[in-house]
Image (cartoon, rainbow, N blue to C red; front, side):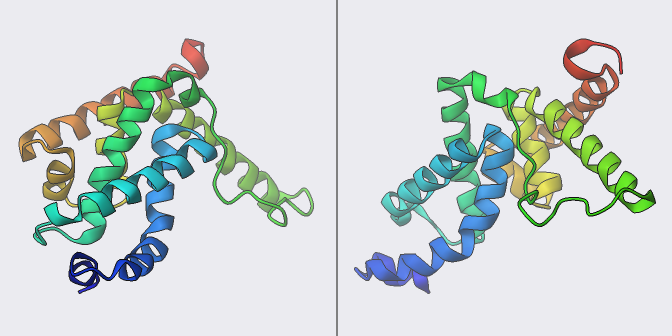
Amino acid sequence: MLVENVLNGDAESFTPLVRAYTPPLYNLAFKMTGGGESAAEAVQETFFRAYRDLGRYDGRARVLSWLYGICVNVCHDAGKRSRKAREREEPIGDGPGESLAAPGPDAEETMSRRQEEGRLRGCLQRLPGTLRAALLLRYQEELPVGEVAAQLEIGVSAAKMRIRRGLEMLRGLCSEGPRGGTP
């Protein structure tokens, strides 16, 4: 309904879409680009393109799925322009007030889990963009394989192959340790 309102000239109806979908798009863009500022720019460009091309939205997919597809394309474009941004990664949600209060079994477990998550994110950043996008859409955003295929504009079997290859490559990267060294 909001999309119809925008198409009928009510530009303000786009604002609730931006508010609702910025967090999931930011999380996807953050993981695809490897950085906060790059992710914010990707989300802004995603909404710009979505608004510009709203007439192309056919309603077959959910609005969020359609936006994911645009965001993946924006991130691919940004990756082509700036490969160096992929190597740095900040954990999401590790802001002030989330530090470990006192050492202990829980603190050690939390620290270990965060280190492992950081290592996994680092390995994920080393994947080719097409494989990373397929994995993030499938496992981070929990889209069914059919929607992953639609958003990447490939067939379902190609989406399954990218997911499988991405998982295999990710396992290999994670088992080899940081930057090709030993674990």
